[in-house]
Image 1 (cartoon, helix red, strand yellow):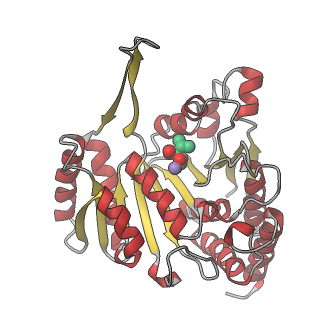
Image 2 (spheres, protein in one colour):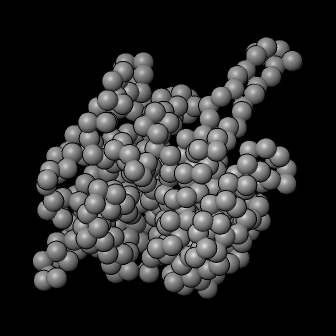
Length: 353
Ligand code: IPM
Ligand code: MN
């Protein structure tokens, strides 16, 4: 079966890391048809919008989307992102954002003395509503009375499905779900979240459930990351915690993510967490690990667990032996790392299984 994959390299370092993710996937020798979509900030300058009008239909015609990054200093971020990734997440109803935060051997962590086996968390972020609902407004612009309202929205349906997914995933891991809210200060949305979490926890007696305030959780991630397994959180809390998690796993360049809607046929969108990094764009030094890892998540989601594992193993081997980019203590270029992963993929696939 030929898989149709849309490549959306986007802005900044996006094209550089996506090229290496593609190279690594191609080394697996799967039947894949790639479509490159030239959307993003350059497209906006030319057409006045970030993506064409039928963009969502185009994406729906694919099995998965591999995204680089969106964002350029020449376009306001709230415009570029609300016309691309945030719109795609909402309109394709990609309600879960899965972000593994695992420290690979050979990658330095800023947490003193921590070993790779002590850092293996999986973040499950609600991806369509919460603090990112996009509902609000602004009035009396420029006057002293100017007001802006940004509304958080929590629906039972969306909260329940993401919590269920977190518990299901914990069953396949170490059996702990930590749910992050802030229901001491915010009295409605997060309290609904906590109520639903209790209900879902009751249906999963084999999983240990704990409710932790998000501020305390941030501190715990630094002090005892080994005490965490699956962490489930609202859209904004998941966003903030996963930058912290990325730092713990060696930096933004290492972190991968999967925007998915389990059980639906919407194409998942797989993207490194690092963003467009305009400060280093075009220099060939961005770390492609997050993009390659995201491609592995993509293959897993496409029902290719062996290929996904081979790709992640190849990446892990390269992280261990080098070459590595400078953000993780090496001197290699983006391309050198990508080529090394591709070579490793080929070596792994050549070995009899
Ligand atoms: C991420 C990013 C996005 C988010 C931005 C670019 C809108 O930070 O994927 O974590 O906040 O979701
Ligand atoms: Mn983020």
